[in-house]
Length: 143
Image (cartoon, rainbow, N blue to C red; front, side, top):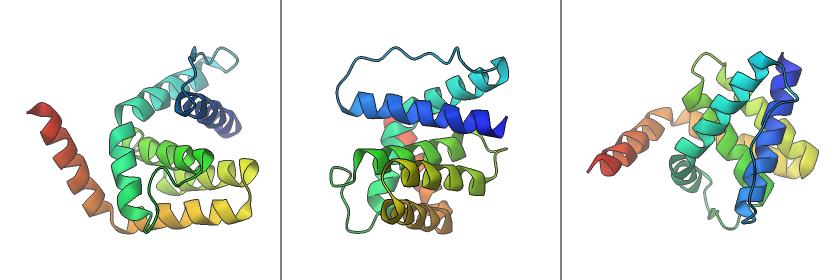
C-alpha cells in the first residue's frame, strides 16, 4: 500500500502542477486500488481545502523565499506534505516529509530536495505557530 500511496502523491503533484500552469484538469484515480483511491481523493480534497493555509505556512517558514520564487515542484511538494499532515493525523509526519523530499529529488534534484526537507523540518519544529496560523486563517474565513 505504501508504494501505491507514493504513486497517489505523485499523481496529485502532477495535478497541482497543472493547476499552477492554469490547465483544466479532470481528477481521477481509477488505476489505484479502492483503498488507495480513498487515500488519494481525501489527500486531493485536503490539498484544495488547505492550499491557502499551506501557502501562508510556506511563506512564513521558507525564510527568504516568496511562494512565487519557489519552483513549481518544490512548492507543490511542500503543499502536499503540509496538507497530508493536516488531513491524516494517523500518518507519521516523517512519512509525509520523506515522501515530499523523494518527490522533489525525483523531479528536480538533490539540492531542491534538501531545501524541501529543511523547510518542512522548520515547519515541524514550529508546529505550535502553524496551529496559530491555522486558527487565525479559519477565524478570518468564518467572519
